[in-house]
Amino acid sequence: MQHNHTSTIHLTQSGNLPLLEISNRHARATIALQGAQVLQYQRTDSKPLIWLSDRVEYKRGQSLRGGIPVCWPWFGDLAHNPATIQHRYASQSAPAHGLVRSDNWLIEAIDERDDSTSIALRHPGHAALSGIELRLTITIGDTLRLALHTVNNSHAPFAFSQALHTYFAIGDIHQAEVRGFADHRYIETLENWSEKTQQDAIGFDGETDRIYLGAPEQITIVDPLWQREIQLRSSTSKSAVVWNPWIEKSKRLSQFAPDAWQQMLCIETANVLGDCIELAPAQEWTLGVTLSETALS
Ligand code: TA6
Image 1 (cartoon, protein in one colour):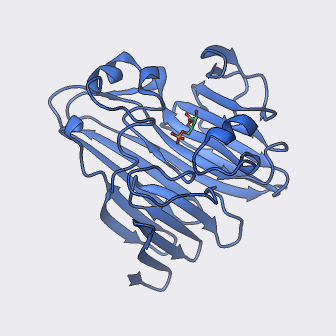
Image 2: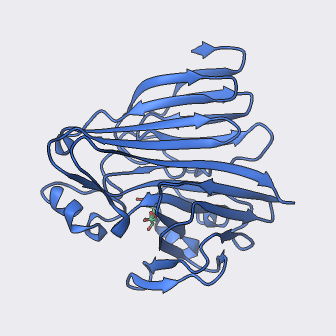
């Protein structure tokens, strides 16, 4: 579709979903316009950073398993979101993770630079969100940057929760650990949403589904088998969700092979629960994250 000395951008289709395929000298990526969902990102010198199910179904109206689903204007089950958010949507269907991941977003801008390619996508709007603008800018270079931008152009306060629900590709969950959360409080959703404190690095030996409050600005996934560390950096995400379905939940997940849990891990960059955002009229908020990787020294 477009070409210069460093990048190509093609509009393709899989199933009945339009996809953007981006390639430049640093990396290649695939973005589904449905849900503005990054599906793949891989640096030219490395393994895939983002995990995508090998059973993914490219169907209109349903989220694809893997990549970076955009959860907005609520996270998970609406009933677990703050009352200010629940009340606004009480009279309509409330799919898991909000209203925008099965809509086709619009390409608003493409910016090709020497060291990166940026794609700005805009949500087309929704009857329940009059006056609210939502954009996602995805920047593909030797890092992957996402910026989810909400503008309140309405005449009333607008409260929302949000998450960039990133599925990471890892060599073996049994060996992996996540650093950065020592001494942080978290909600253990698998034990009646009880509150606990993280002692050291997070290791994995069973289903894990935790909401960390007061997320650090840098989170590191250590992946010994693939000899790499993955870094997540964000100054605007004050919550983080750590999720691996393990054996039993994997059997109940759509588009998910029974053993896929061994090579994926979700670390979600979020503003949820008490960290939800409330914008006064004319206010705006950007949830940004930069994903990068380094070889294990
Ligand atoms: O973020 C963790 C979580 O809420 C899990 O409980 C699981 O439901 C996951 O999201 C996937 O949700 P989805 O609706 O994409 O299948």
